[in-house]
Length: 145
Image (cartoon, rainbow, N blue to C red; front, side, top):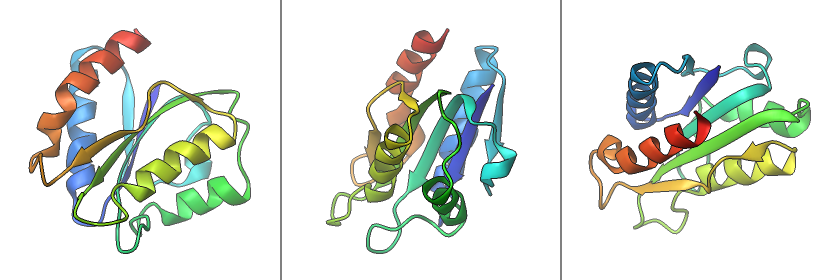
């Protein structure tokens, strides 16, 4: 099972999560989207794809903050967890994609296995983030099948 976990302030990460889900379904890969993630509701096994924007001064969006805090305070056993992080951001800010980069490093620190480097999408270059994702997503699907 692939769990798509979104952190979104204005909906961009949710749109990207929906697009990922659609493409995974077309590839016959079972997945579930968590737009208001709760750590206790998501098994720490299989594959997690975290899609998050960065808010304010490098912060996580409100909807994913409790999930990240729970990962930091009481990390689950992640020996059977693989993950990828897609970070959305605006390169005109010093904190470009800081939340996504932090999530990627956090999951590695608690023992999960990264499937890719943190994939960053700059909305300055890609106003429609889903378009920037296509090549990455195809490579990702090949890697996990």
